Image (tube, rainbow, N blue to C red):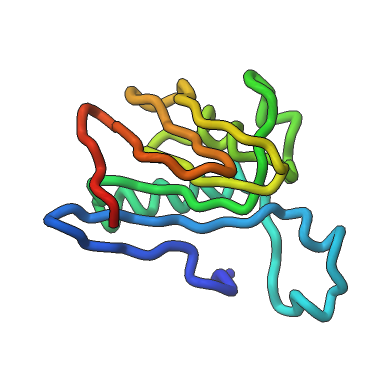
Amino acid sequence: NLPYFKPYTIINRKGKKIAVLGMITPHVPKWLPRSLYIGMRFEDMITSAQGWVNHIRRVEKPDVLIGLFHTGSTRAGESPQNYYMAENAARLIAENVPGIDIIFSGHDHRRYNEFITSLSPAPTIILLFYLAVAVMHGLLLPPL
């Protein structure tokens, strides 16, 4: 099953390789007529993110991996097992999918800027609705 859209892109800037993974909430079919998404399928964002992050890290070997998601956030500590096909999965992805350095996300009309402890050694930065400058692993990322 090939994706309908290219799921990620690679940007090379100032000697850094940056991967950007894009995803959208799987709830689109609940709101829009089928004629607007013929040929598309919508997957659980946590499962999909894990697969693509593993692929990107293994194949592309980026210095930074960014999640660019059209989804909101859930409350801290919510289990991904209880939120299969969650509409607002940014926090669940940050907490449960190692390998993402920063998430830019928006959908639920809330504002968040926070570090999320994840399964990876370094925290994932999650920025929902607002964009900000991120400091990761002691490295200030310059504007692209």
